Amino acid sequence: MLVKICWGQELWDELTDDFGTQSFAAGNTGVQMGGWFNKKIRSANDFKGLKMRMPGLGGQVLGKLVVLQFHFLVDKFMKTLCRCN
Image (cartoon, helix red, strand yellow):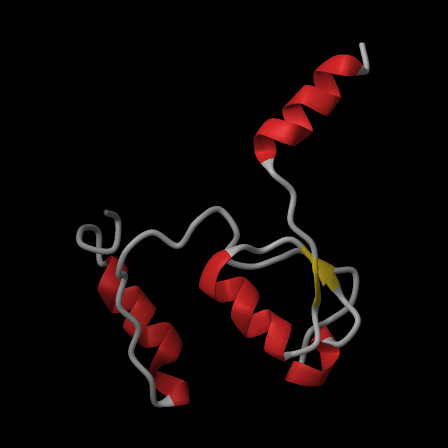
């Protein structure tokens, strides 16, 4: 929503202009759109061997970069968590 108000699209355009691309918000990105890493990611090769949880299209793209993906079902995780107390 903020992309449509408060100069969101203009800021996004400014960010991507140097790359010759233009981005548009389209649909739900899910909860994972990026990551926090303890080393700089400067190229696609820097993703090799990283372990990330990212479902959907983002996970498929990262899988092509040899990122080690792992998925877990939230309901199974919650049941396990509740058994631990």
